Amino acid sequence: MKIRRTLLGLAIAATALGFATGAAAQAAYKAEYKLSLVLAPPTPWGQAGQLWANLVKERTQGRINIKLYPGVSLIQGDQTREFSALRQGVIDMAVGSTINWSPQVKQLNLFSMPFLMPDYAAVDALTQGEVGADLFKAIDKAGVLPLAWGENGYREVTNSKRAIRTPDDLKGMKIRVVGSPLFADLFTALGANPTQMSWADAQPALASGAVDGQENPLFLFTVLKMQNVGQKFLTTWGYVADPLIFVVNKEIWASWTPADQAIVKQAAIDAGKQEIAIARKGLVEADKPVYKDIAAMGVTVTQLTPDERTAFVKATRPVYEKWKPTIGADLVTKAEKAIAARKQ
Ligand code: X2X
Image (cartoon, rainbow, N blue to C red; front, side):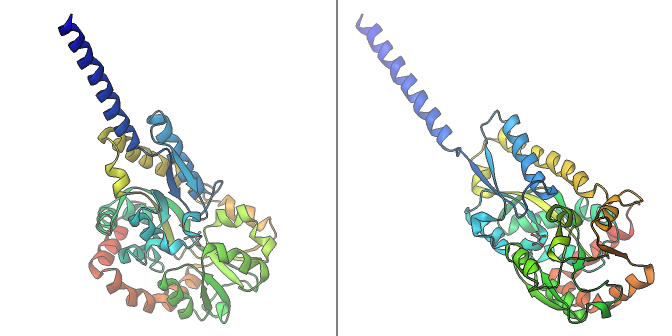
């Protein structure tokens, strides 16, 4: 009788212990993981975050629950601080642009090198090849775990003043630029008057006419109806394209089981592939339906001839040369070679 009671006691104790360890393991998972983004759905960028969150929730049966924080709201809209906040754990995860993280990870300026990537095959040759792997190593070394590539896209210039066909057309124009000093150098080289500001500040600045123009992928033009804030001229010069990268804070990553880590990574890869297709829709087709949609909004769409484009390449070449050592001359050369060898 006594032995039975002792055994029963042990069983109860063991069960209690089991519950306790179970509860401890559960507590290591947060109720919600904060995912930072600049642009919200329905932009492709926002959809990248949404797709990732949905896939992770489904495949982990809700163990990992990701909430979207667009507008980089976790850091009050200051997008160039996103990478540091990720490293410090203020942000758990992000789908972020190479441009916004380039102040902390200098190699990411590669994608902002003017006229380096003439087409989508060139973008893919970098992100899907050795250069992409090198960049993931650099991000990892800087303290954040990269998992997959997505895409913001080719950044085309718009303005309220006149059609831009030559660098001269940009003379004196006040252009809002993103937070990498490379962009300030670029627009200065073209004779424009660049003003660096966050995307949060850019929208009222465009609306009030405090700036004349901006550069961003075209889906943003359509989503925000930028013609309504005076952006009547678009030049499709394809000078740079910014990829997106799916990342996780390293402590958060370490708190997950290997099985869940694998799920989160695969979900990022799957979401990235889907999102890249979304970002390119209307721009990869020969007749470029997106250009037509924007022209139908009453916007003058200027497509450069090869000669006209060459004038912009020439004018920005000193900026390319200036930034090459900052990014890493070897990395830039590797990128140039990968692009030259791309399959078209
Ligand atoms: O600020 C921009 O222009 C944006 C939204 O494209 C980025 O965050 C890089």
